[in-house]
Length: 323
Image 1: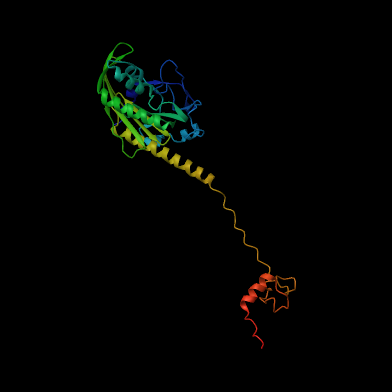
Image 2 (image 1 turned 45 degrees about the vertical axis):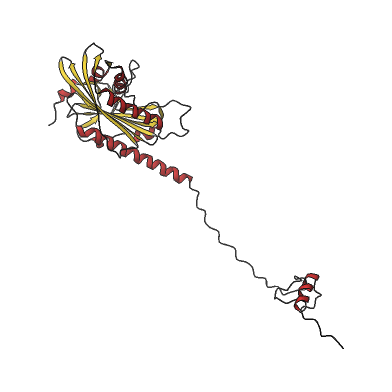
C-alpha cells in the first residue's frame, strides 16, 4: 500500500529547483552526505601523482553509468531534497571510539577514498516508504578501495551495538549488521545495515540505512538506501545489481573500442608481378658452365675454364695407349 505524501513531507527538506534539474548546494560546514538538493552531482578528481594517465572513467562516462529511475521501479523518482534524519541521527559522537570511524564514513559517505578520475552522483526518493537512495560511481585506486572495504567489514564485525550522542545532546541507540551481497557482484564488495533508534522531533523513530559498496576493476560504486519507516529489503540489492550491470557494460564497451584502435589496418595484398620469360637465343656471352639450353662447353666448341676442365677430366675416360 502506498503511504500518504505527508509521510514523505515530514522527512524531507525541499530544495530549490532550477528548471528540470535540481541545483547543487555547496555546504563546506560538514562532510558530504546526501546532496542538499541534487539529482545529479559531478566531481572531477584533482590531479594526483599516483593517478593513471588515462582514468578508467571520465565525468561524462561516469554519468552514463549512473542508475536510472527505470532501474528502480515506479515508486521511485528523482530526489527533491535531503532527508532531515541525515544530520539529526547520523551526525554525532559514539561512546565507543572504534565505532566513530564507522559512523563518520556512513554519515559523510566517505568509503571509497580519493577519486582517480571522473565521478558522478545521483539520488532518488521512494514515495511508498518515504526513503531515499543515493548512488555514486567513479574511478578509484583498486588497492585503496579493497583495503577500505576490508576495514569497513572489520568495523561492522567489531561495533555491533553502540550509542550515538547527537549534536543537540540526545542519545540514540545504534546497531550495525552485515548485508550479504551476491558473490558474483563485481570484483569486491561489502554491505552493512545501520539501525539508529531514538527520539526525533518528539516521536520515537528508527532509521534503517543500508550501505553497499562494490568495486569493478579500477572503478567502484557506493549505494546508500535509508528511511525512517523501514525500507524495501530487496531494493538495496536489486539497485546495486542494476548499477553494477550498467557499469560493467560501459567498461566492456570502452575496452572493445580501445582494442579496435590498437588493431592495424588490413592493407590489401598486392598480387605478384608476372615474371617475363627470356626468349633470347643462346650466345657466346652466356655462362661458361652451361648455356641456357643445358649444352656443355665442349658441345659449344669453347675451351673450358680450369674449373670446368677439372670436372670434365674426372668424367671422361683416358684414351687407349698406343703400341
